[in-house]
Image (cartoon, rainbow, N blue to C red):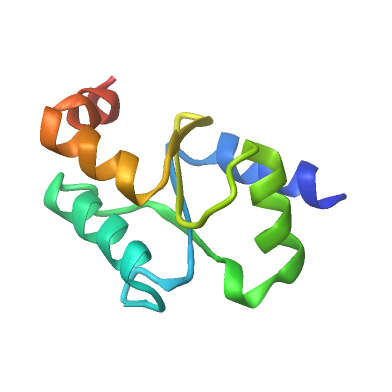
Length: 102
């Protein structure tokens, strides 16, 4: 299975997927920590996370998959939502809560 197929399988097999640097319990950058904080604040207790620092193929592949240059990247129900800044804006406006409830 190539990296794009692996990513597609990951984002479509789990309702909430976060590609990040580090893990939810030990984020390795401030943007990833912010993304985890937002999901926790919204009561998302379980989400699938992928530590891109552990897999160079995934680290580059996810950027190509979404055509988005930065990490973290959030996917909800198989759809790319955005990175840390977009998550923050959507959280503040209430959009992210609605998307998670859908």
